[in-house]
Amino acid sequence: QVQLVESGGGLVQAGASLRLSCAASGRTFSSYAMGWFRQAPGKEREFVATITWSGSTYYADSVKGRLTISRDNAKNTVYLQMNSLKPEDTAVYYCAASRYGSTWPTQEQEFHYWGQGTQVTVSS
Image (cartoon, rainbow, N blue to C red; front, side, top):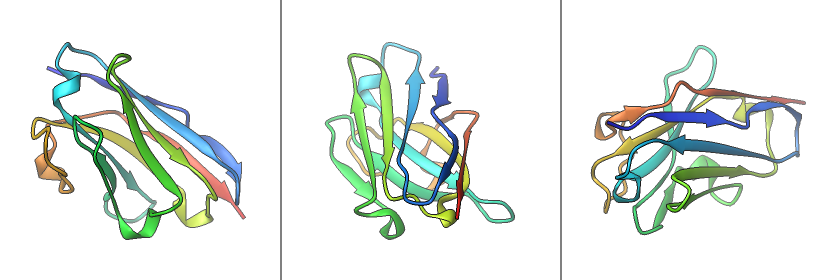
């Protein structure tokens, strides 16, 4: 069992940066692929980024070059560095863990554990 707790969300102006963190419980964190999803008001949850157990990353086209996923296996934590934020980045951001550790899972059904989400609001 893995429990995930996100933090770092908030209200910022367009162009600002934020770093989200996701702390995971459990001794098998390093074997999981980790991902970030987001859900904007009135929209379906969408894939943002994923990272394998070894640190290989994959991004949604809409965030390439602005958002960076990383992980620190010693701290059981995955991060999402968000730069040059836009109002359209406003959403609840969710961290997720997948047992398919060596792959790039991008679909919700490929993830087995989810955090509760953290709100990011970008004002224009």
